[in-house]
Image (cartoon, rainbow, N blue to C red):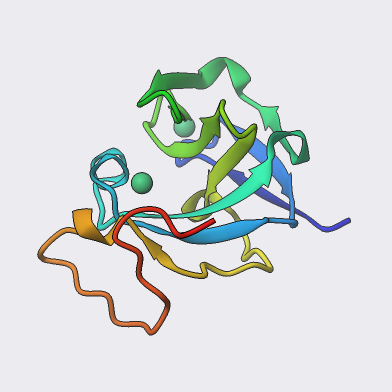
Length: 134
Ligand SMILES: [Zn+2]
Ligand SMILES: [Zn+2]
């Protein structure tokens, strides 16, 4: 089983995840833009039992962003690492926090209706105004 490691900028928090992402995409919603300070995030969805924190769990702070999303980040350096999805039991791992490329690349753009006006999508992936169907 191939696993991928990842972690935060300061190096206190580390994790491993099985390279078995079920879906992946770019999210342009305002919460992803603001929590990342960037044009959005690239995330991969995986059942939470395929993910484990390997070090620094004491540094992980959680912010309940909505009923569906608990954002998890390093309290020291502020890196956003993953989001818990209590309703579906999935984790959304921020691809930017991974140390190497996952097999499943982002498949679509989500929440394009909230996209920053200054950011232009320059690839040919499907775009969804909110969530992708299904
Ligand atoms: Zn950190
Ligand atoms: Zn988002």
